[in-house]
Image 1 (cartoon, rainbow, N blue to C red):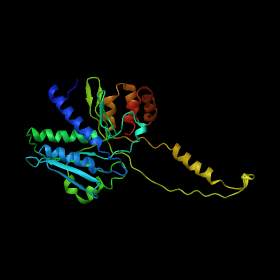
Image 2 (image 1 turned 120 degrees about the horizontal axis):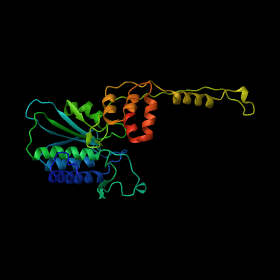
Image 3 (image 1 turned 135 degrees about the vertical axis):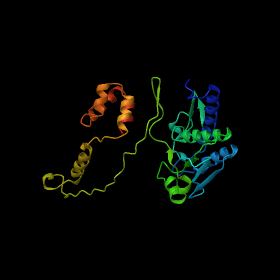
Length: 292
């Protein structure tokens, strides 16, 4: 068993503590909408208080609170913010093998909505903070913690609200948040992958005009639906240039062992075809590389 540098006893203790906190967080139904993240935020606040860490709940409404905590440093070292979100996507019980909000531990897994997005991360980060405090570790820089509301829908009650009203409580030099990917094992190697903010959104409202007419004389009218289909087809056929990304090269070099395939992935003119070839061999790896 890979204990990540801990003794087997320490690893088992940490694992049990994370699982216990995670199951309690899952049992707090924070489906968004409507949210009700306060139920989980209270669980965290009580956990921190039990471990001698002051925690604060702040939010725009009583039902949608964010949990903030900190472990002060001994000097003016850099601040590190550990962050995750408390809300989850709604879950219909009839679609689940196990009840989505029971926090059931079975077959070596924790089952429930939020177990991987992201109450697992929220729990693990909280336990890390608590263990540092219990063991008396004093870091040079301050560790900040934020378990936030409203990530799944719009962030109006979560990070955005915090930045608008309590930016001083989140100000940090570095942030560890969800994204990127979990640890990847390649043989004996452990890879911790980066997350690159490379995409945005652009919303358009397109109006298509036509000329009405009787179905028996189609040559004498202009069907707007056909014109709209041509617009959609144009978007579907658009293939933007493959950009070179500063994070893509070291990642591809680290995870793709086939030298010829690796070279094709790193060349803009052959990247798309190479990605299709990679997907035929290892779809998971292709999905990991494609966003870059």
